[in-house]
Length: 559
Image 1 (cartoon, rainbow, N blue to C red):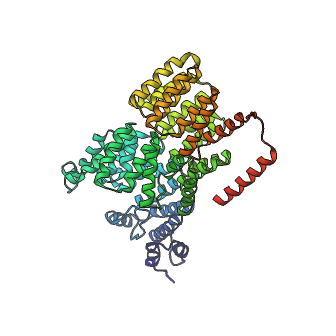
Image 2 (cartoon, rainbow, N blue to C red):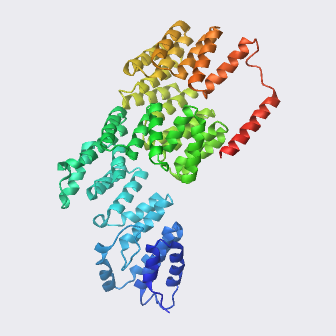
Image 3 (cartoon, one colour):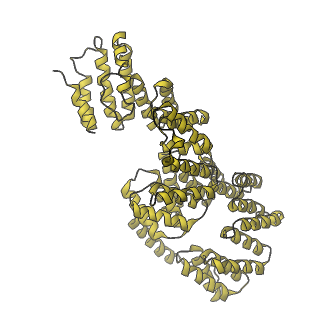
């Protein structure tokens, strides 16, 4: 009894992949089909089964099945093969397309490559894709090939394939972002749009006023990719005026603000995105990192809880879990960060989080590898900062200085890059005068950069200029009510035995941020000093055990 093929096509079109897979097993094992006399029927049935397996994510089985189909395809008589190829123009190369009326060898190769790509087998995927003639490649094929070349670090070939995508369609945003990150100039990307329009009947792209916004978007991404964060923010801001409450633009702005340390502004934008669309996962690990810097563990816990309920398989969720877990168990947090990288080897926040945790665990050599991993994907301020601090942690001054100068070269107008060079010079007594100049230059470039002000104050303290440190910090406190400034002032006053003034500033810091750990520990230590108790004396074991038990119960409730 023959099984009608249109039924499996109906199941596949209806997304009933499990049923399609079972029916496919009947089709390929049907005794009414003789593989020797009707190899094209056997091949078509195997492709149906392969499609069902692909959509069920049984990639190994799908690859095996598709390859069997191609073996039968090769023995189809020439006249049948010619007829099959005539249907190419009516066929889609998408893995989602299942209405197969005839065999398209290029489409089957694309599906095999898609399976290899899903299994992170880049080389095997490329072998399949390179077997497809360039003129036969569809938009999806070109995009997959670009990604595979990029993952293989064949950037020149990747750029060519991404450009081909934009010639097909100028709105392939993945291609725009990738080309910007690969260092292609904005004008070169935009010129690719018009090359595509000259091939087709659509209006010339650069003469359509309504598409000016896309050119601005390209320029914004190129600014960010070249570390011109200020220029990128200005362009994204223009786009936001034209497209108010655009979730994607708000996320891009928040991401850049997080990178350059505009933490308060970034948190506001991330919260706005969540109010517009509470189910967004993209960049929410960046949001988690910012909430931790603010010690806002209540919001952090809610964010992680929400992300777990939305999609617990995304790398962003595991980075957010790592951020939440860090306070309790750094090694556990590290395993979450590593899990995010296993899910997506190109997920930069996973490498940044892993590097920071390794640095905290006093494993700076391993931290260097993590930050280098982030840099290879896309160098940004945070990976440079991580590298510098990691090298300094195991006294590799020369390497630290090289990384800091690389940052300064990449971001010549960045006060934070200048501070990095200052940090390296400040790490040894002979370089403190140079460090002072770099910190002062950073503050001239960005007067509101509190990181440089705090570093300069610390330098004053190290060199015994406590009065200069107090004057600097008090000057900044007039314009910025920041808890970190109060903590630093309290530490300076405590070091000079001005305990009442230190107490006042610790309390001020905690009024601004009740979760500031440095202020809490400093205040606890100061109160012991004021009572004449040795602040370095160990706590009683019983008290510590009670605290740990409470913390264990709290973490169990959180997750």
